[in-house]
Image (cartoon, rainbow, N blue to C red; front, side):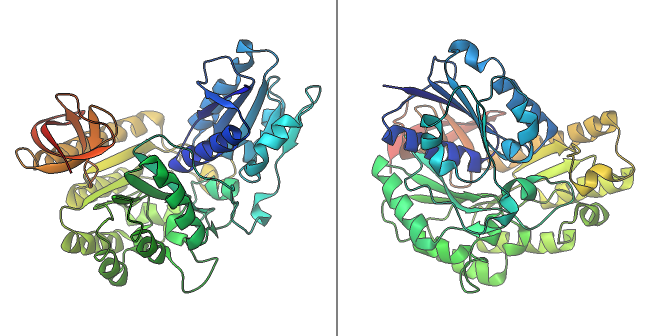
Length: 428
């Protein structure tokens, strides 16, 4: 049996696509092995969201074929899409595929002639239809990502992803429904609906179809216990959206609303299409309607032109919103984006200082949010024998072995930086 190994960088969408490629190889009678093992085919699914992502992608390519000089190294994904000429110069790279047509990866690999390189990267900006894989995202986990949408038309000034992923393309509701039915045969407890910009779901299909319509359909799948959403644009949170999600009991009370900055001037330069006042209004809608809701976010520090005053505005706004967790990123210029050419780029030392302050604030808010459940009975989906998450995405660590892939009622006894320590365990 031929062997194939995968290494995945980046977001949940990339992990979904890797699982889908694994499924294609499995159907062609390949054995999936660890990336450090000897394999006939190595696939690196790349990320390009930051310069560090590019660097890590290149690092994973170099030396891979030392394990088997006759193997085929196939590089796919976002970095491959925007940097095919650069990747073509790396000696070990045999095949380059971008962010479309990866459903044909098995055929491409098997037809590959080892005495020449192959670069099959098309113009993603001309792609107008969602790429169906013809299978399901192979998974043996309790939680699985389901990709429902690709592409983005927001063009935030710092972001390269619209150029790597192309325009918005949505899956039909029926296709998503069928895949979820397929993956739930593996006793999946929770699905995560993910995409490059899922708040845009459906806009390319019809004026009448949006993300909420998909959620209402998925709610009807009896075998699913939980539905979780990926990152959302804040503007999707409207009174109508709220009133409809209140009727979807399987939807987890955790919303990741991407903020990026708490300063209106910085948001303008980022080309974000809302103000902090708009954002806070959405936060209040959610908190008033959804019991024990958790709100998480992403923040960029050191964006070009971010003054001390703008940073302080951000700090105060984040303190006011009181997220349950914040992901803090230091701004990284991306060649090909407007922000990379902006004046007043921020010194690395200042970025580091600002980042540390926000990380400390995030840690404080995370502890405050999680600690309110100490001594109270909560339900946890255990992804393995010792770790799991609540519906509002608090990480819990059991002090004794639990049954994996079960939802259990437990009682937290104390908080650590790694999560809530819990006792008990009655399968629900």
